[in-house]
Image (cartoon, rainbow, N blue to C red; front, side, top):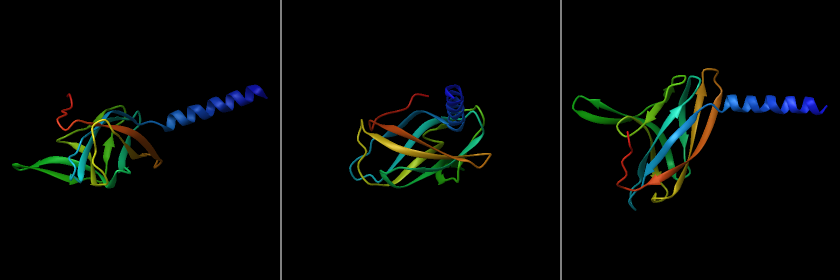
Length: 147
């Protein structure tokens, strides 16, 4: 009986580990000034299986969206996208000037040293949804990420 319990417990751990596939590296948000109502969030995403970032939520914002910066002729434009593909085993960088998360209608000023919760929703090729919640540190107004 005890051995069956250990086998079942080990099997459930493997199933859980296989489902929790997306990793988030080096997340950060730049601090805001008191009246500022928007902020960007940046990070690196990696998944061993092909998946897609389809949604983001945060309790500090009225809404959050996935965005892309791209050149349109001589003008840099930012636009909402419906998701970002994460190819299997390849890192995807969410950074200033490319894909990133935008937080709108901020409910409070974001101050250096705070932690902002972000919940990222991914959908795999099997249509299963996975939520990954990360605590994102707020960096100084002058912060520039290393490349």
